Image 1 (cartoon, rainbow, N blue to C red):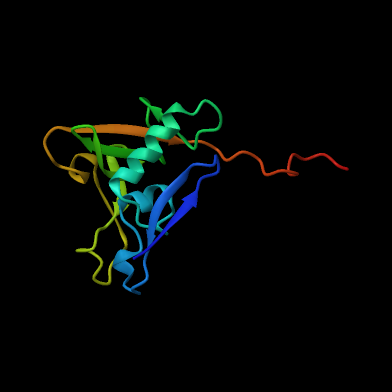
Image 2 (cartoon, helix red, strand yellow; image 1 turned 45 degrees about the horizontal axis):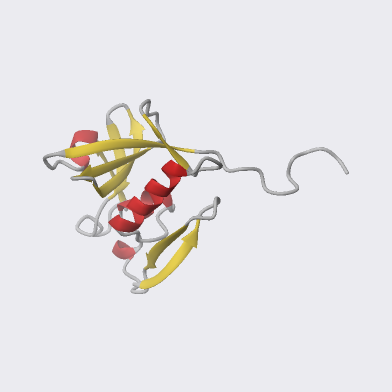
Length: 145
């Protein structure tokens, strides 16, 4: 795995790992699937740092915490206050997530499960985050010139 960083649209830098092995099982983990389109591996502390920073941004957060989740929202599973897993809400009571290295033997790189099976450990807290629309790129505001 090659260490590196990516920068979000609002300037937050996230530590990532990029697969250098050629084995697709290591292309991404659950967090890389949920916030980086499956392009990177993002460790739990880095995901937690990203989420906590977004919560405090007053202007232009990439995600905001919500108590009214909808399809497409990020579901974050924590134990004792530490982020442990994430997935994407894809329907009522169901999530899609990176399948994990054990499941990659030729099949899909994602799996869809009931939300209560996505991280079935005791004392799990589930938090939802709603992705925010990207701001318009400079010069794309319409109008003629």
